[in-house]
Image (tube, rainbow, N blue to C red; front, top):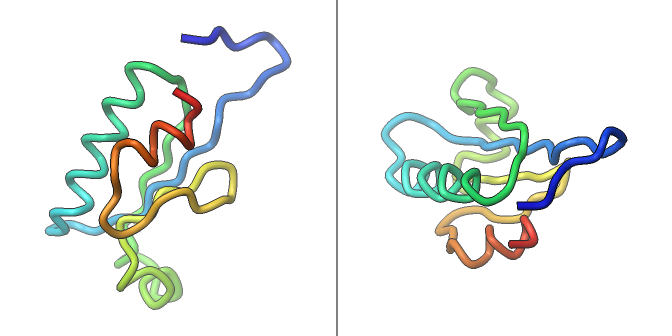
Length: 87
């Protein structure tokens, strides 16, 4: 695992999800696995709490965003996440 220097900040990961979404559950498990190899700050957002987010992502979840860039959505493959995290 690469050490973070004092001037390096952790990647900011936003995970758009909702309860009862099996693809979201699988993606969350992948993010947990990634966390064993790469550090990051995770914000998990249930899209049902915000109608704008719900309309934007309802047919796309789960959505994984790193530093404002969507890196994976829908049926997410572990290899795609690993590539996004450079592992």
